[in-house]
Amino acid sequence: MTNILVTGAGGSGGISFIRALRLAEQQKKLKPFIACTDHNPHFLNFPDSDAHYHSPRHDDPTFIPLLQKIIQTHNIEFLHPHPSSEAQIVAENLKQFENVKTYLPKPTAIMPDKLLIHNALHKKGVRVPRTVEVNTFADVEKAFKKIGSPLWIRARRGAGGRLGLKMENVEQARHWVELNTSQGRCKVSDFVAQEFLCGRDLAFDSLWYKGKLVTSYCRERLEYFLKHISLSGITGTPTIARTVMDEKIDRVGVDSVKALDPQPHGFYSTDIKEDSKGNCVVTEVDGKWHTTAPLWGYAFAKAFNKPELNLTYQYLKLALEGETDGTLPTHDLFPDNYLLVRQLDAGVMLEHEDQTWRVV
Ligand SMILES: Nc1ncnc2c1ncn2[C@@H]1O[C@H](COP(=O)(O)OP(=O)(O)O)[C@@H](O)[C@H]1O
Ligand SMILES: [Mg+2]
Image 1 (cartoon, rainbow, N blue to C red):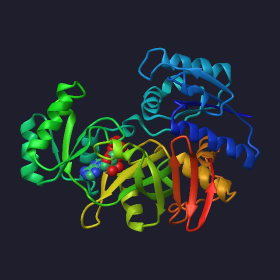
Image 2 (tube, rainbow, N blue to C red):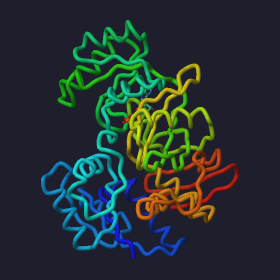
Image 3 (tube, rainbow, N blue to C red):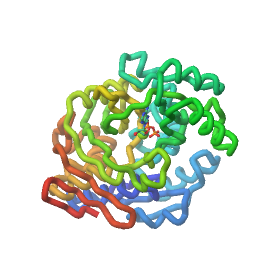
């Protein structure tokens, strides 16, 4: 029996992570005991766990003591804080978790500020959007002069495309910045102005162990959930995405992770947008799981009955035993041109040409 604690397990990513562990239980005869937490009491029943606990938010002083209590009560061997905010708190306080195994990047590689990402990658020669730091609105005007239009104005912190919108001119940008600052969402200096990238919306997901790339895959986001009710069309996680095999994306993905963290250890997500010339430009790299990463592994492991494609299972094997089940390709873990199709309250399908697997 392997006793595992997954925190923040009530979100889509955490639910998929536990679902993938349950699939490994069937396919590999694992016997995990899974405890979980979430700060939303209503979402706590979603993950298929053996025990669940309502937790405070990550920044509450009782968060770590609660995790410790669960670890001791259930003899937890491996702690997986799933959301970035919770992973960061655990990574910052590893000294308090010496009684349990973890598999996390260093805290500075988790949820970094977009401007810091830009600067770190630029320094290492990784292509990033042309960027202007914003301290006052005059900097936005300066950005239009320096970069041209349109611009992409976004918040430096937060996820899901937070406060990101295409701006055709200074006037639009002024309205956007003023509206959001006057409604108390942010300060002017929380924004950053970047070159607008009109090309494909790509993601590179990679698993690393003590500085070495274990495996990775690329995909293209084709459509976001509820895109029609969002101003930018970006709502954080796609309803349709497809696997892509492309050495250029692989190279950029690997370089971006190494630029953020010279000794990568754990799971990393890179977001790449193509510019009008088809260049891969990195908009974000973060030591976190993209929401659908555990689901992709689950879908292929289930549809093909190949447990080795289950990223969550391989991640657990590495965390517990320091090696994967079988040798994995460092790139293109999944075959090309498969679509993962998800819809609210409707389940998940894997599609390829005229074949469809209903995986959830
Ligand atoms: N400069 C840009 N031009 C056009 N779209 C962008 C730009 N930067 C980000 N985006 C879009 O916003 C999405 C979210 O941005 P990302 O950099 O991944 O940060 P986060 O996910 O933390 O919000 C990207 O996947 C991309 O679709
Ligand atoms: Mg992103």
